[in-house]
Amino acid sequence: MSNKINVLVFPAGEINSVELHDSLSTCFNINLFGASSIDRHGEYIFKNYISNVPFIDAPDFIDKFNKIIEDNKINIVFPTHDTVALFFSENLNKIDANVIVADRKTAEICRDKQKTYNEFKDFDFIPKTYTKIDGFPVFIKPRKGQGGVGAKLIQSENDLPSDIDLISYVICEYLPGEEYTVDCLTDKDGKLIFVSPRSRKRLLAGVTVSGTTEELTPEIKFIADIINNKLSFLGLWWFQIKKDANGKWKLMEISTRVAGTMCLTRAKGVNLPLLSVYIAMGYDVEVLPNNYQVQVDRTLISRYKINHDYETIYIDLDDTIIINGEINLNIIRFIYQCFNKKKKIILLTKHDDENVYETLNKYNISDKLFHEIIQIPNESRKSEFIENKNAIFIDNSFIERKEVYEKHKIPVFDVDGIEILLDWRC
Image (cartoon, rainbow, N blue to C red):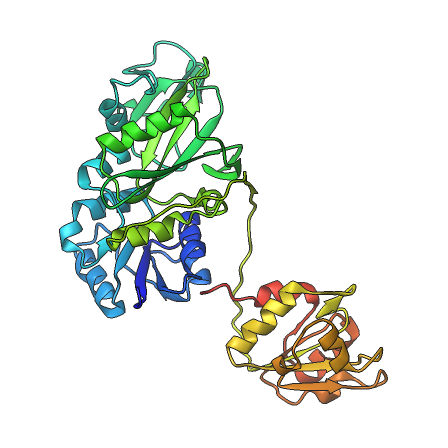
């Protein structure tokens, strides 16, 4: 694999596209692209980002999508939404790249929970379903839905919305037990080569924000084998199970797309998106999971864009790059970010404990990172040493920042502001 593989994520704005980005963006043999019809988070993380893609129901979608493939020499397409995955499975022969998606029959079954239950009705891991609500509690969920949207526990008639059309819903038994997602990988020959359960301890908008890798039991492996034998997958896929009142696992849904919390499986050393790329390219793959348990807990992360470009960074040393005798890791990341972008980094410091070069050496910080190192007396004002007006100034001292801002009218940042300057696109 001497040539790079060009991979396109579409759409590239939701949490599972972030997982694809994190899985593939640092792989040496992958060129990663993101594309979306609606600009969301993708433009903050994908270095190669394409906006204004038509919606899949637009008459010219395939023509314009193939033009994107041609212009960027795309080898692999990763659909990230169930409806988009189904669309691609229906139009595989019209797309000018390999698409990581199941065949049409499988995609149709996975997209519709009623079809899923009908396909596996002969197995006891399918929950009881009903044509109407005769008793309580029951659980209703849209036949075509994701992320728990529209799913609802009905404990009495009062819980049932008056305007709901149950024709588009599945009515099934209430499953009160613990819930797992099971990540799976099917190779190019249809063999199921990896199964990894993970618990869903806390959810936010249907996404697992706290969970743990769990033991693969014979019961879970049996369900995975049956699904893989009856359907046809390519690369990664997953299914969700929940325990009934008797502690038996019941199937909730199956999906052919990447899951946002596949990061838990990747944390065990199994990069399912990367392995799926190799499978789609026709390679044989091997899975080597680490033998430990992993727990994840997530919250919102903020990424920023500011409408100010700059070519020079004036930055302090004490209590900025070095804080409490330790290197500020965010600052070091930012310095290397600027180094990669060939911006001028000027160390402007009143450091007086020892020679500044000795201090940098003490902390294994190369002085070659800096275009210039200016060490000034304590009584001097840093504002007097700033020459480039297309610059920013970073210093923990409010007085220094205030003087620089008033004299030069350039943006100034305290140490906490570094996160605003970080560029996550790669």
